[in-house]
Image (cartoon, rainbow, N blue to C red; front, side, top):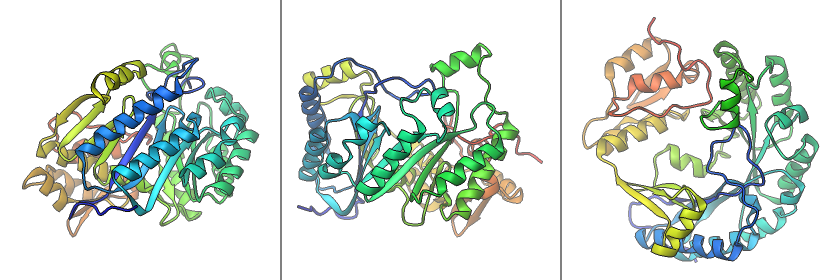
Length: 404
């Protein structure tokens, strides 16, 4: 049954975190954990309780998208996925075109569950191919090979209505020609959406240790910039232009769930380490799986904190997130969140416009194609933030000075 959202309120996005993986990838800093045994009944009950808690705080809303992330949510029993979706539909009601995405690894064991996951209600899968080459997959610590990944992609495209897959580039010693050839091959598969990320060395990962020891070298800024520009050009020519810093899609095939983040809509996060935002409250769940379970047993939910966001913080977040998008951000909405005036540096905007890095037309601020390469440097120039801004990530040349 579909319920009507509260008057004037847009549908909310629901994120469900499954924290478990078969093994830990050396580049990953996500909230992912390896456990020999998982009490599936206990986990299902705890996730349902966490879900019910958020539902009680958001009555009258409607869910426009659901995203199962991780970890490796394709390791979830399909019955658990079905139970969570049934509960979400009962608590909130789904919109008529609800998008339900599940992240999946392309191992044959997980691919065998695709039909059951589709029957549970999943209508979009995001497949972690990461590379089409065996050598790169071994370097990245992936448990699948290239042939196994492509077989999973074929199966996914036959089972799910919508499919996306991830690739990581800017690997050590990767040449521009090699990446162009791999990307051209990826584009030939006819997938509607690609997420293309440059390899970044995240603190606390095995790759960070190897880099500190001088055993791992990623491409320099100029090479990374060349790879980024080639990526944008090839995907645009193939009809999948970048609609966000690292995401490319055919028009109409954009991830509606992720757009709700970048457009600064409300989203609810349940499960270990999940973040959410209910209006002016930022929510954070306990990160460690055992701590989250204990909190659910104790309190009926896994919340660790709820932090009020003032107008300036909300406006700045909306600005930073919106500038990741090709469509840019409406400064009138940013100003409304701030309570009157958008927290932007107009002198910096004027200067950056003259450099061809941003445009301001009819109240909409947009980063240009040339500016996309320098997004990490543009954000602190434009936003009048009271705290350090998150970087866009995945683009080369973030430290390039903007002054002529």
